[in-house]
Image 1: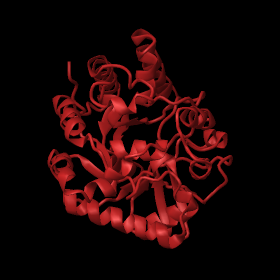
Image 2 (image 1 turned 60 degrees about the vertical axis):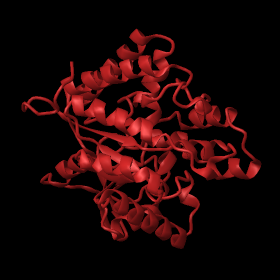
Image 3 (image 1 turned 90 degrees about the vertical axis):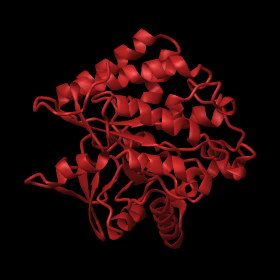
Image 4 (image 1 turned 90 degrees about the horizontal axis):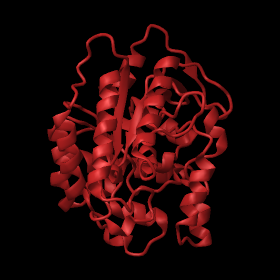
Length: 336
């Protein structure tokens, strides 16, 4: 039964977002030929996701890739997201998970191109950012603050980044140069020491709220939907139990979760056979959608779900806002 996100005053706050990575961006990161033609599945996945959200009265944040927004054929699908009342965020222009290697000039051009294309496609100005592959740097944080962004959502506090990267490389056909570009994909094990709760960066150009992608408190293992769906390929019951445990840990520790979705969570093998190298992408769409909707319903029963901007603003409005400078990842910063 679909569940509304209307708060009754007793449910803690949580946010929900979807990184709208397109077919070509996965192929590009994977090192596959043919991505330059920008093959897309947005016309399939966007209506599917919007209908699931509509049935549950949920408003979320869609992080859109600028290069997709620049393609006229994608604009009806992207405009439909904004028209449905969802927040639009910036997911970079070229979707390259090595933004930390960009020069200042390249970074500024990347942001400007993404902002302009997304605004033209959706009519919305972006004030939130998530780096592809959780890629970010002090230089990027400075630029976001200077350009008036309210929040970043690029940190992924888990110790398992190197394992995820090793799996990705094992399934890829990358040249040595491409592997070098992607050597920081998903971050280092030190990312696991970053805070789970929202906090503020004190950058050289001003403060910026950080909303981390939530991992399981204490254990710091990923809990976003892609991982739950992967577990479901072995046992649906185990996958749902894992999700319920993650939410119980969030409530026990007072963590306000920010759940991350991806398009492949709502697509099956019949929709995109070329991406069969991804976990759970050898499964048909129907069982994946059944698990995905159950996860969302459990989430909405326990938390008041809001878009990322509202989540960030709820912390920015707190009476005390401790600032975190650009610290090494192993230093703990104060939460809001």
